Length: 396
Image (cartoon, rainbow, N blue to C red; front, top):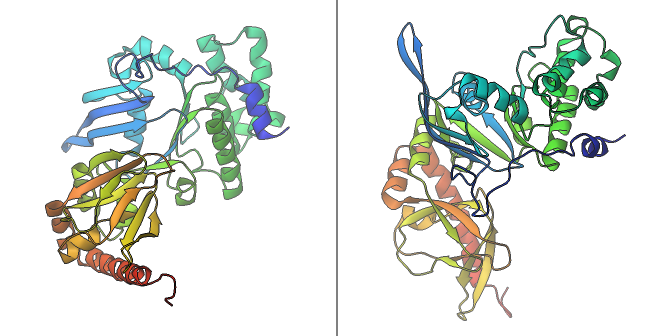
């Protein structure tokens, strides 16, 4: 039986909350997961340590999000905020219709058991229970499935992760990688709408890790939402979105990709100064000949770059996609915009984030290597534009 077919059979009951008629959840959040200005402090022998610094995060239903960053950056703490394992020192955490930061311990346990599947880095299977009993335990605790269905469901889940043949063994009788597969099956026991996983493939070989990722990917295709802390860059590249964390703060992923020479501190500062703008299909974002005043980074959609031929006719010389940017030529070299940029007419809305001239100039001034990178990009774009301007009927 294929993975996709098994998933359809196993996960038909999707308990994910739906939005209200006004497009928002009960507390006004319009995303399945929202964190607002979340701060987390820990008391240590050396004083107060701030693990998360005014984090804002939004995750839509059905996203597969990788949370990546260096050791100690705040990745696991961020996941623990969403799972209710840790409570924010300040700020708010909303998951669907639930204000997680307001739940007491009893409410938290019930909510978590029904709505979240958690995969820990070190398995945390109960050593005195068999593999199948470990998988059944969340079902017994939350009483989501009738007693007569639980063992059959647990067997199917173990089949999904390739552990059905070991169902009656104790965790100590199987390998670490096999224990992690059991932990994933247990996380799926109550068909939760959200899976949070802290380094779920960290103790698996590459082949097994790939099979686990396939299971996760299939769950997302069935409407599940997955947040996965990982150090595996190859896996991180295969998810729908990556959240980068440095020193307890989120860095815009596309900004980091566009300017790899910038330091983490510079990227954090720049992320805080990004201003989002949305354009409808066909809208002009910047017009040729107008004063240049902003740098643009594409988050969603496609934009066309148009220049005029000697005849005066406009021509599309390039199409830019998410992660690409424009506006840097004029900001670095001065003068007016050398091309018109528009949202592609037939490809939906365009979402960008922008930096004003002053912020962009200061940022580049702090990083000579980034300026050199941009100058190379500018040279290529200028050559492309000049070539396009002079290419028309009768011209080579």
